[in-house]
Length: 382
Length: 157
Image (cartoon, rainbow over all chains, first blue to last red; front, side, top):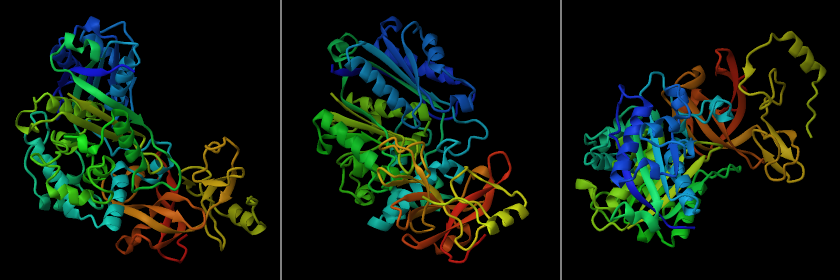
């Protein structure tokens, strides 16, 4: 497999974009990425567009072709990717694979989502699935993991809440974050209960947003930029779905992280900065453990140690995470990768982590049989 | 293999009972009226792999063999649970409770509704019993039957 690098990024602020269509959001991010990389539309060999809800919220489908032609990309293979919360990072994985395999030299990935539409309920597992028909909603799945984590390891409501406080502090430094006002542990704990023990401020908000990156064979990356960011490994996995399912440890999460480290020839000790799927406060705690940042069961205590805060040993979700940015599903996985790219290029402004050489972007998506439907882990370095 | 044929008493009961709400998915639990045994979840058994599944999949995912229908245990222990307090789907009344239940003897951990009348009493590790209740609708507004586990021992339907 060939080495692949990231040569351009584009992202629009996450928030409410009521006056913009999905295509308008996506095309702006794509244009910004092309300009950032100095890449001509005609040089792009393959394009991937990520989205989760367009058919449901915008009555749109096969959107990638619309987005890419708006920025002059046509005739090449274009694929539309849906993989729940990892739609963006799954599309990124496919772009990486397209170049690593030697079939293409340059690929574009764009992810976009519009969620501020009336009547959007909680995300579920699909209308024909037994758990959906019983009454399962996504926060409930994480709430049951949280309850179990508290039961087995003594994790506290304060430790959970601290994740939201930390990420909001980070988000206040990120111009594209949707929520920037500071939070306190008490505010998180006392906000209305959604699914016990997760309160409203323990759950990521929805959002409209778009993000795009340009990938290129590393051997040709310096045509476009003096400081390309190399992809050390890119992993996409699905769940096990075997019964009895293990809520803790989350096998799919651990398997994805382990595989990414193995393929990169790196370990948790090599990681300087991380973005992970903090859709709920408990999720970040679980991912600390899967990413090997602490032993199993210690995620809550790691959270309050300060190690994962900006200025700590290994900051996590310096972008503000999904908890501050919001979670425009198709854009999220790409946005996480962009944050790591900015950190590695020392272009993250006031939230810059000093001396970052290696970063990791982690995402999980969907629910099935007590497991996730997808897990992506990308390790990047300069 | 379970005998799914009805006893004369059950047939008489069914004929005299007006057609009530339907289960949320066909074939996942036995239908009322219930005799002494109470409701049972219906799982799949692969005779070759000796594995049980719930709900019963298309074929055995391990050997692609055909599956037999089996009644699963109506007793279990609560592995974890949560109370859902917002945006209920299917007209479920809020708050309602979801949990994972480890079925006694079956080696299966199943997602289930947990009896919402006793939310305050729920504890991880407690013993629970299956019941079937009319709760919420089927997505089209028709009342629906959903299975549920309850810490109480008395039968609720």
